[in-house]
Image (cartoon, rainbow, N blue to C red):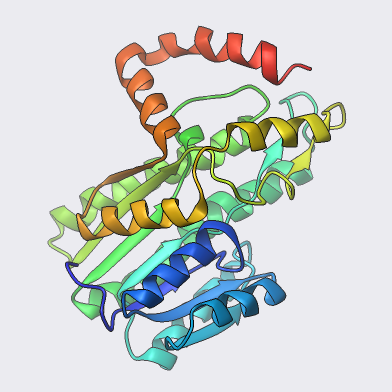
Length: 271
């Protein structure tokens, strides 16, 4: 996919953050947009921010499998084709393995993993039929390394990475006209930390302040990097200098990265 003009792009979680920035940049590139979110007010603001682009807004809960499959069929019916799907919607949970509840664990997996998996599978036949498709699944730097109090988020994001990398190989081996990319953002200045669920003993205020201090990249910059990666057909799109650093440490040290994370966590997470 060398040119985005007149391509039909689907973006989940488009009501704020990276999703909104992606929508605006795709609109500027000439895409026709199918945008979704559970936050209808935020989604309406995104539609307005996209200016005069062709945009349709859909309320979508990505944890609802049947809703995702119905959404895929509706977008195909509304636009006549689907070329680009960015499974971006996501949530966060900060809690230790001992403290997190089954409900919280299920909540994050349903959105962060199953939302991506179902979104991919629901749209894949339409992407293949387009003759020029691209799936972009948003993982995280926490899909590269394990971090204390992020076990559920790690589980979801590692799963997204494995699922996406496997799909990319399948599409190549089957000679299908669909490219596949996995995105690993570092700290992005979005509201994800403010809307995160917390374990019973977590200091929510301190955790959120800590995240804000570490967030190095704006959503607009993240969107630019992601779109550039799509056009270059990158298999792994690293977003932010922290993402590049974490990826390098992981490649260099392997599992020996863990003592570094433990030292950082003792100072910043166990407070």
